[in-house]
Image (tube, rainbow, N blue to C red; front, top):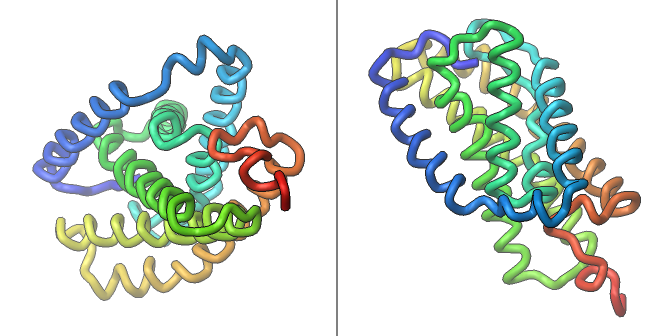
Amino acid sequence: MLDGLPAGSLVFMGGVFALSAGLVIRRAPWRRFIDEPALIHLFIATVLCLSALWQLRAGTAPGLALHFLGISTLTLMFGWALALVAAALALLGSALVWGAPLASLPMDVLVVAVLPVAVCWWLYRLVMRYLPAHLFVYLYLCGFLGGLLSTVVSVFAVAGLLGLSGVYAPDRLMRDYLTYLPLLAFPEGLLNGMLLTALVALRPTWLATYSDARYLKGK
């Protein structure tokens, strides 16, 4: 995804990726796969769907690709740690299938997975702590707004890295990349909002962050 970055940037971000990976390995609830065998099938299917979704992209130059993320729904389904694992596996699979350079994989994981997941989880925690336990709050803020913000953060992170590394001039990034952000951010929020609504209605047990007792009991 991020092509043409200097070797120094790749090495530095590789170190950041290693630290993030260590944290995820330590904090991820691996026990859930033993306690809930069906979760393994759901996890694998989600990784495959995510990898396929990320192939639907548009771009004007190498590294300036725009595509849906689906990170908000992913985070609400599995929690932040397993969401990062799923996103990293989806990126790895895409890189292997399409022959993308693996040297840029740590950078891709950071801008496509780590930052968006962090935003979605941070928003979810704020909603849980400060707002009433209302279903529409969960759907619109955690789903729609989380999806929108995750895309904004990811796109600006890519633009910042490419700009600071000197790969593209700021005016080129604005003209050929950031200009299209509004066309992607709102549909991303809408997509995640619809997916989350469908899961709440049809498969609420697939959502690690959802509980009928919290959002529907007594309402």
